[in-house]
Image 1 (cartoon, rainbow, N blue to C red):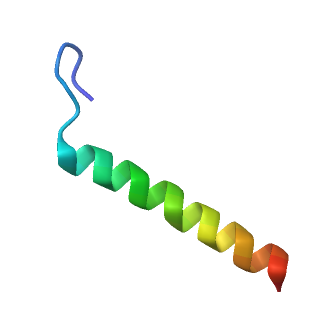
Image 2 (cartoon, rainbow, N blue to C red):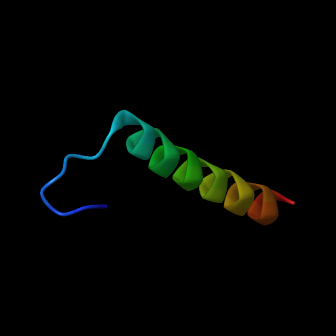
Length: 32
């Protein structure tokens, strides 16, 4: 991210999506 610039909604969504995918993959691996 560029310093002094607020994160855009797209950046927030991308970060949340990446975290969600990681959590989902981890849960699937642990559950299986």
